[in-house]
Image (cartoon, rainbow, N blue to C red; front, side, top):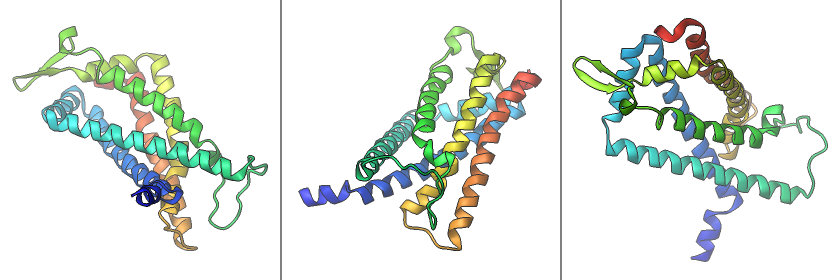
Length: 231
C-alpha cells in the first residue's frame, strides 16, 4: 500500500498531474472567455447567459467545487515540484539562457511562481466581486422576456468603468499571458510529448494561445471603459 502511495505521489506522477490539471484549467479559461464575449452583444445577451448558467443549480455548484479542487491540486503539485527541483539543484541557476535541446528558459518560465500567485489572488478578488457581489437584493435586477434575473451586466460595466479596476484587470491579463506562455509547452513536456519536429510547433502554439487569451480578456475591460459596454 505504501509503495502505491509513493508511486502515486512520486515526482514524475506529480509532474503528470500538474500537466493534466494545467491543461484542464486552460480549457476552462478558453470556455470562460467565449462566454464573456456575450458582453459584446449587450446586456440582455450577457445576463441571459449568466442566468442560463445559474439555472443549473446544484449541478453548477458541483462543477464549481470540482473546479476549485482542480485548481487546488494544480497549485499543490506545482509548489511541490518546484520545491523538489530547487532542493535537487542545491542552489539556483546562474545562467538564464536556454540550456539547449528541449529546454526553454525564458522570462515566462522563470516567473511561473510569481505569475501563478498573482493569478491566484486575482481569481479570489474576481469571484468575490462578481459572483458574490451585489445581486437582485441590492437592486441589480433586470427582466428579459418576462423572466426576472440578476443584472450582472450592469455590475460588470460599473466595475470596468472604474479606471483603477480596468487597469488592474489589464495588468493581470499580461501576467496570464506570461503564465500560459510557458505552462502550455511545459505541460506537454511533462507528459513526455516532445520531438525535434513537434516541440517547436507546441512551443509556438503556446505563444499564440497565450497572446490570444490574454488579448481576448483584456479587450473587454478596455472596450467597456472607452465605449461603455453597450450601455
